[in-house]
Amino acid sequence: MILTIPTANRRQVIDLTDILAEQSRGKSGHLSIMVLHSTAAITTANLDAGTDLDLLDALAGMLPQLQWRHEHNPAHAPDHLLASIVGPSIVVPVQEGELQVGTWQRIVLLEFKGPRECHIDVSFIGAREEPTMEL
Amino acid sequence: MILTIPTANRRQVIDLTDILAEQSRGKSGHLSIMVLHSTAAITTANLDAGTDLDLLDALAGMLPQLQWRHEHNPAHAPDHLLASIVGPSIVVPVQEGELQVGTWQRIVLLEFKGPRECHIDVSFIGAREEPTMEL
Amino acid sequence: MILTIPTANRRQVIDLTDILAEQSRGKSGHLSIMVLHSTAAITTANLDAGTDLDLLDALAGMLPQLQWRHEHNPAHAPDHLLASIVGPSIVVPVQEGELQVGTWQRIVLLEFKGPRECHIDVSFIGAREEPTMEL
Image (tube, rainbow over the protein chains, first blue to last red):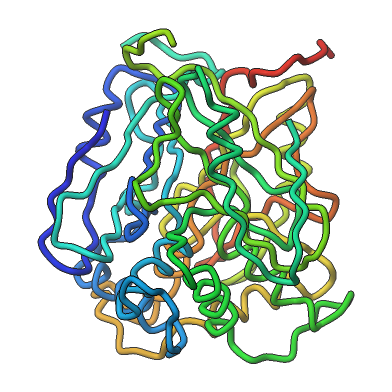
């Protein structure tokens, strides 16, 4: 399925965990999450208050200050570059309907060029090879 | 299968999308792409003219200038470090023979220590759990 | 299964390759490796002597020096941020019992907030669609 996530800001961290947990109910296997844009990324993050903005500032600040060649609009080059560095997709294990993530670990969309409707391919991969109980 | 990709430069961004699309024809599931080197990475990227070089410059420029310990050859340490930071592999969903990527999103090999023959494991994972039409 | 890896230092690179190879014996498919913390990451790396410390120094040095908002403890913000940037998980192909990695490429846990017991979900995904011999 394609998740459509409306984003409100130019750069924003959006928590996808609850909606992905909903997709995983009753299943065991692996959830593939891939953003269908070259100016957004998928990863996991701690989302204690302020940490979302810390992450956006860290990413913006770690890029060197260069004259970008990107012909479409050099000012937008960092949106593409950060998306490539963080990466477009993760695969998250699911066991008996539960996403396997840590207590403070959230699955997040990093939007680098909002606001817009952001499209994410969410799909389930096979069955994990472990004994599981039917839910 | 192992893809063998000849690279021409020390550092280079190489578009793998077309050859991977060829591997995905008639299938639904997920494509696993993993580079078999510690000095190369796999991600997605926008490839508007110049953006490949922007990405290589961004990566080189974001590393601190340090005396590296890497004993084999300290000058090559950044090749290894960037490979680890970007990551060696992605999993891309495939639906009815089509790689699920955005319009401007290309699947790329980042070569950090060419020129050489670069080896990439490309393999298909099971069937995605969604209704699909037979092609 | 959940791997429990005791870490000894605040920041540390730990080679998981041998224990993951053990999990892969006799199988063909893909191994999912996901760390269940928001202050650790999974990637691959060269581990020539000193390169583990080079990687930790590179990561620490590439973050900008900012006043972090992270309310729990601003000094710990970089632990979370680096985990998000490197990423929590990779999927590694396995063929006839062998992890498909390069000669010098090791699968590593990056610990950013040890020492502790670090938990990693290791699970096998379906069968890869290629002719394989039974082991």
